[in-house]
Length: 209
Image 1 (cartoon, rainbow, N blue to C red):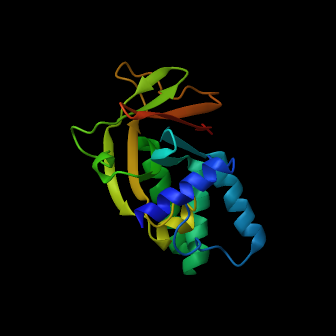
Image 2 (image 1 turned 90 degrees about the vertical axis):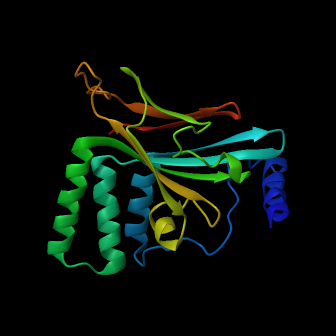
């Protein structure tokens, strides 16, 4: 299977598709309503980015990340509501929970495909990786990195840039610096999630609002 995955990556690079991660397994679930599906994808694209780290033709890591802005949280909850046929009261409760979380942290969903499992240690205290949220005001490191686990069809319903052998993480950053200034100043257009180690550096840039 590993040889197959490497072959897929190599073909993508040689074919000029270096920005396309390997897609393995069933397609991600989609909504029956094409307009609703397109609307969600537009919001997802606004707050997501994907990058790769290579060693020649050998892939070190594919990474994708989505900033959990209030607008994205709203879109994700409403997508869930359509998939699960949730009653309005449940939807409103979920929206309230999500907005409360948004007020506490700047949070990313991060999905990674690491060719060598030894380097898939983002949540470990002594990880080789350093994550940072970089904004016009400076940079901060996470207050929490939690491994969600392998990307299943439910995860891929919301983050379709992941696939079968990807792993999801929740990465939370403070909303303010120690001095009290906002990490993302008002009017900021774009922020960056930096994923860096001795293996390479990936800079994922997304809209801030």
